[in-house]
Image (cartoon, rainbow, N blue to C red):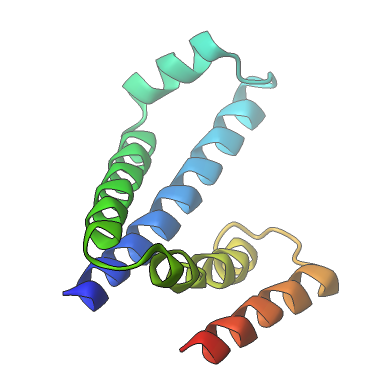
Length: 118
């Protein structure tokens, strides 16, 4: 069960962060403005992908709560570290962000740590 919960945490966290980043950047670029609290609340109500991002983050949070209820925190937190690696990779591939060598090396170091803990 812990591996199922962990998979849910990682997948929904990555999905939520990618969707959130995409939608918030898209909105600011099309309106030529920075988001304030009011415009963020309007965006939440009018953008299905942003609503999906919030739902994904909620699922991730609830799955993490279930994970720490049954597993030690010393396992749960490091085990969710693949989100850093996946988000860095997908930020470059999906969001077309520039991932410089420092970030890539940092993600690889996190991956090495995950392997050592596993």
